[in-house]
Length: 158
Image 1 (cartoon, helix red, strand yellow):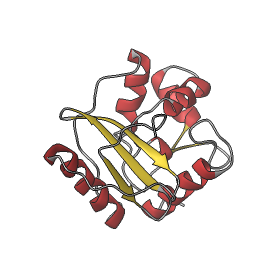
Image 2 (cartoon, rainbow, N blue to C red; image 1 turned 180 degrees about the horizontal axis):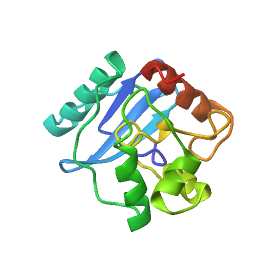
Image 3 (cartoon, one colour; image 1 turned 120 degrees about the vertical axis):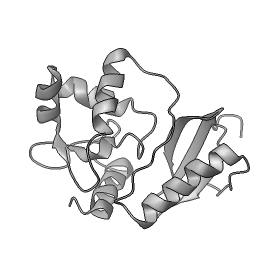
Image 4 (cartoon, rainbow, N blue to C red; image 1 turned 90 degrees about the vertical axis):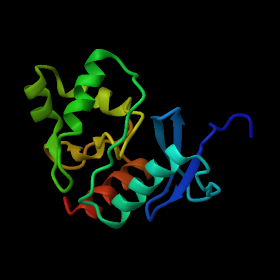
C-alpha cells in the first residue's frame, strides 16, 4: 500500500511486530506494528545485522542493541535520547528524575520520548511516571502502553 512506510524488515515479537527502516548503514526507525502486519526478512546485510541484534534482545533482554542511528531530532531531543541509552535493561528512571538531571521539565522529557524514532535502541520504555507506567508514545492506555509494559516485564523491571 502506498500509505505504508517502506520497511526493510518486519520482525515478530510477543508484544507486536517491529518494522525496521534504515538509511544506508544508519537506523532510521523502529515502528511498533500490529500483529497482522506481514513479516518480512531482511535482505540487506546492514539491515540483517540490526535485525539479529533485535532478535538477540528479544531472546535475552539484558543485551543492548548497538547500531549507528540516523541523526535526527532537535539538540534537546538528542540530549534526552543519549541519556536514555545509558539506562540499563531492567532499570527505570522517572520522567521527573530525568528532567531534574537534564535541567528541564517532565513534560519536555515525555515529549522527547514520544518523538523517539528508534525505541528498543533508545529505550524510552524505561522512563516511567512516579506513580506507575505513565504514558508511551503519547498515550496513557491502549496498545502502545501494553507494549511498554511487556518490554518492562521482559527486562524484569515490572
